[in-house]
Each structure stands twice: as structure tokens, then as C-alpha cells.
Image 1: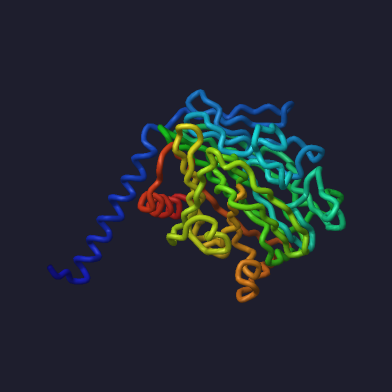
Image 2: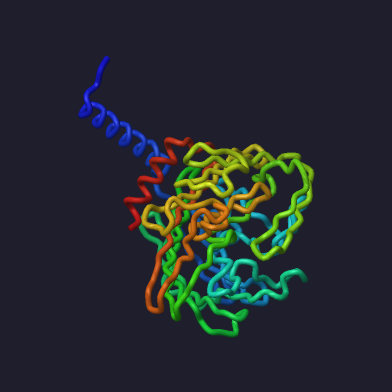
Amino acid sequence: MKFNRKTVQHLVSALAVVLFINFAALAQKPAKIQLNRSDKNHRVDIVIDGQPFTSYFYPGETVLKKAVLYPIRTAKGTLITRGWPLDPRPGERVDHPHHVGMWLNYEDVNGYDYWNNSTSIIGSMRNRKFGTVRHTGIKSLRATNGKGELVVTADWVADDGKGPVTLKEETMYVFSGSGDLRTIDRITTLTAVIDVNFKDVKDGMVAIRVARELEHPAEKADVFTDASGVETKVPKLDNTGVVGSYRSSEGVQGEAVWSKRAKWMNLRGKIGNEDISLAILDHPANVGYPTYWHARGYGLYAANPLGQAAFTNGKENLNYSLPAGKSVTFRYRVLINSGPLSDETLNAAEEAFSKEVK
């Protein structure tokens, strides 16, 4: 049977509609969302249908050098984020103390490292210049029409919080869920206070540190070296129950996704008897779309659109600059599903995200 171009276009459009409907079916019957603010405990707890989902947590710089979403749970209540260092669990890795929950920052902003800063800097990194992302306020919060919206502000402050302020941040989180699906949108606008340069480096930008069970099985001990020559040793551990595996929108799988571009990434795994899919979607309006992925088998799951030289051995260069007074917005959607998410479903989700958020 032969099809002309017009017929093919109709078929493609019809298929896109079907896929979108299939994705939308995941999000039927919007849940009841509550945003419970506790200034005393430095957190806003997000509750979906009476069950804790996550918290916006800003404990201060003696605990963390940035605000985070921590912990994050599935619809069934299973923790998908690592507990250490805030709430250690047996069998976890204890590397990278700055990997906590879900966050957004960057390794080199005007020469200051906002990514690796923590209260537990190892000796080999003490000569670095660090920056701090300081929570400055909760601008608004509301829950309506099955969504919870939280708007917060922060200052990116050089010299480990002593100054000057380099960037003003405003972030909107949108939380939603129904059935087995939970969704987080993070929409972050950075406004330069002074001229700002984001040097091409690997450590950035939006990231989640996942639970041990969602890591890839560790076949051997490994050593990761950053652009400054600092080494981090990651030992081989017991792999019992560890079955995580990445899959990208381009069909790349496993640890091979590192340094590859993709519109979305899906980390598939299992905790106990629960099948889990944890997907991060990039947005067509973002700088560097489709993003490079700084996704490691040991549990760091990050999208970095600005580190192009680091991911291509210098074949590409961005060195993104933001003049004083100018702004840039980064948009990401995270899907946490108790069950599988197919490529077709994620392609439809990517299309929906691009239309719903501008």
C-alpha cells in the first residue's frame, strides 16, 4: 500500500494525539495538594492526597550551602533520594556530601564553585574558591486545581557567602500528582547582578542524588577526576537489590548516557517490589537544548546544558555569559512513576511540557 505525503502527515498527527492522550491518562483525577510552611523548621512540606511527597528545605549554611527538595518519594511513599548525609541509611554510599535531594547550581560562575561547596570539604579541594546559594525568601505558595505552586528566591553569593552577589534567583516549583504519578516542575530564572560567565565544566546543573537501589550495579571501584584534577574515589559495593538503568530519548542506555545529548532521560529501577521510573525532561526553550547529561551510575543524575567543552573534549564550546541586568530561565520537569514509562509516553510528556511551560 502506498501513502502520499499528506496521508503520512495525517497519520503522524493522529499518532501524536494518541500518545498525548495516553500520557494524559497518567494524570487523571488530580490529587489534593497541600503546602505546609514551617519557618521554624526551615521547610515547606508538600503533601499529596494526605501523604508526604517532598519538602523544600533551606536549613542554612551551617548545614547546606543551598536549598534543596529533600527527601522525594513515590506515590507509594518509597524514598527515591539518598539519605546521607542528612539521614543516613544502611548500605548507602558516603561520597559527595554536597549531593542532597534535588537541587540546581553550577561548578564555575566567575571562577567560584557553587556545586561542590558543603560543610565537609575534603582537603584536596580546600584551595578552591566556593560560592553559596543563599535562600532569601518564600515569595508565594498556593494550592489550587490539583497543583501546588511554590515561588522562592535566593542569592548566588561569591567567596563562600561573603560576597558579592553574582546572581539573583527566582524559582517556581509546581507539584502535582495522581494515581501512581508524581510531577515536579522547576522553573528557575537567574538575573545577573554583575557580568557573569558560566565556564564550560561538567558539574551542573539540575540534579538528583538517588537512592542506592536506583544506582547502576557497581562492577568495580572507580575514580572520577574533575577539571581541576581533584579525584573522588567511588568504591565497589554490594550490588544486592541494585538494578538501576538509564535510557535516553535517543535510545542510549546504561552509563553510556554520560556526556550525551538527549531531550529526556529515564532512570528505571526497583525498590523492594515497586517498579520505579524517574524521568527528567529538558525544555526546548532552555539554553543548550537538548542538554548534555552528567548522569553517573553511582547515583548522580544531572542535566548540564552549559558544560559543552567538558562533554566533547573541547570540540564544542559555550562559555555562556550573562551581562549585568540580563536574565536566563531554565525549565525542567521531573516525573516519578510507580511503574514503567515507555519512550512513547515520555515523548508525549516532552511535547506536553513544551506547550504548557513557555
